[in-house]
Image (cartoon, rainbow over all chains, first blue to last red; front, side):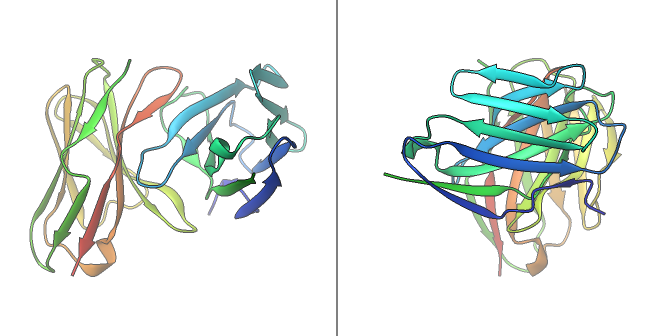
Length: 113
Length: 110
């Protein structure tokens, strides 16, 4: 049973516009959430994280929003750049920090120049 | 900078062969992980280790084993490779805040 879901397998956005990637989870014990970015033939790289005591975390062009009541998080990229084209995975854990992560299935973002 | 390296980027093996995938991290992390990534399925945990000689099964351990003789090295073993083990294999080690991934090994079993 998939505890972390990314329901959009792909997303296309024009360069300069906002990209919004969504992630839903079912386990109410999850308290730490991460986003990873993966280019083809490379391993995922950590992008940004948020703990459940916050509802927003920002790092440059990347902002993650957490809605605990809806069990939903989203990653906003503003402005989107062609180099952002990659597969994005969200991940969650329950009281274990970065250990025992549950990953979503990924969303492929394409930023069109 | 954390570095996680994997012994091969691409590997082609035949059905029934024994396959070793090696992973080394240089950050003295206690926890290490092996995942496989398949289209539409995301990353699925095969095994993890939280200390030398310690291992725990993940979600899909069948057909795999692991070895952790030294803290920096975590090996994944396919005892008898099968075509359904064709996949991208990713090794990771973790700090408290995140997991750091190696570049991956694309394994093809013919």
